[in-house]
Image 1 (cartoon, rainbow, N blue to C red):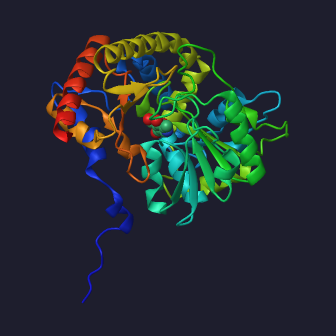
Image 2 (image 1 turned 90 degrees about the horizontal axis):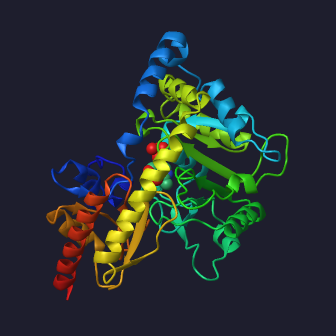
Image 3 (image 1 turned 135 degrees about the vertical axis):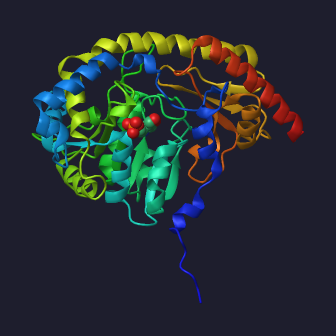
Length: 399
Ligand SMILES: Cc1ncc(COP(=O)(O)O)c(C=O)c1O
């Protein structure tokens, strides 16, 4: 008699690499360069505590009761107003509040994908997005934006949606130039493919003024935005990830569909956290703390890249990112297997993220993602020294 399988089939398609680097932060003495974590010193904790108290006392129903699925109307209005421009007209009907940006990704999978549908994904791609869409069993088409002759129209034809992180991609740290943003928007409009713009790092520009969002570039001046871009935002890197408050901005039909999907996920995002985030916006907290965050992270970016130039330049190549949280380093020697390097690195007291987890097919084993926002300069330098030792050991083993 055949037995029923205990778990769904998509779970067979997972590996231990992700679990290993996600839990590495617990190892004492380890230099964790693997995560994408903000420095806790940037969180405006006293102010958020004050807003939490006031939310419970003054907005008890919002904070402690059941809330609307699509979010508190005041917060939706505030986000719509913040993103509106003369030709980008947004109302609350364009905004869904989500439980972190991560839920926005998951809901996109729920409302846009049938099994086997195609996602055109910027390559390498954010691990969390790959994970969120796994139960939908999609096909992937890699969009290597920096490749000569990259063809947005061809990439999007027949795909259900395209997925991009144009500001300092996780994992590559790459900034998509404005002409390419325009080309992606034009291709989405011509093909009818949805264009997901995932933007947790859009405020973390260290060297220049921010580029226009694809959401802005897709605006037509319609009385209510009805374009192809589905924009995902979050307070995680701007205020604190523990709030778990994010948002989707899109055409009203997309908001209606994702709201239906959210009903069956978590019903609504914590009203307490939404009220805290709204008060923070009303008091201008994100704008006030941003300059300090930029100074801190810029110095750490510089410290990491200086240490890498000293200890890793014969082993890896990379570009210095102009924002975000990551450096993407590609091994000079193609025989280096970075899944193995991650494990050898742990033995040397350092953890980095291997490229295989950012490839939907798990094949790319030549690169690593190195985070610079969590650790001070001296710890970054020590981590890089350990990484150099681990890499030399791995190369010797592979020879
Ligand atoms: C590209 C990208 N998208 C989405 C997220 C999800 O962030 P959160 O759920 O904390 O808002 C992250 C987090 O690191 C990310 O790097």
